[in-house]
Length: 244
Ligand code: SF4
Image 1 (cartoon, rainbow, N blue to C red):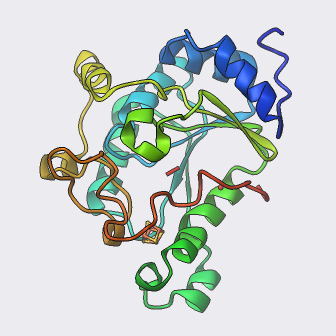
Image 2 (image 1 turned 45 degrees about the horizontal axis):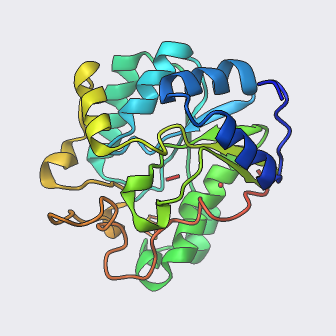
């Protein structure tokens, strides 16, 4: 199989083979392979502009500053995240950030007071994250995420490639550690998200994000006190053309 033989739509076995084939390839090279060789013109990076996002965004800036970068603005984000997005886009010279938002009609019908997160967080994520992302990813064959195995027990067996419905999902940082991320920030003099100073190690929406205590998983502050651990973007088929 050459790098150009990527036809694994819905085929998890083929995805597992690709994960094994590229297991020893480091993230910057994997990013280049995915963007230039495997899925040229058919791939997007999905970024939350959160705590570690600068790593993949910097790699993209070294490969193709015009690569589509999809950002889901749930309209419940911290102002610090929006400011960080603008800082990184300017610093790295990224020219193709696509902001996708929830449908106003859907919000008016189901979450007019912006309080659905308390009553039904799964539905809230569906309206504010999954649906807008699904819409933005229409037409792409593959997307890149910044997920890592060390972030939480639920991500401990995260593969490099996943077959997800009609699309391929690539997790180039799956095997990275926090030390490695910190070293990358230092090596490339990357700015940090302001909320890191307050111990927000994984940053999502305001109502569903809290600081992390010493010894906790980095994602322990997400949906604290609820049984929910993921927004729904990872773990279901993104039909219609749905990380965050
Ligand atoms: S993280 Fe919370 S506020 Fe954001 S979309 Fe999900 S439930 Fe809603």
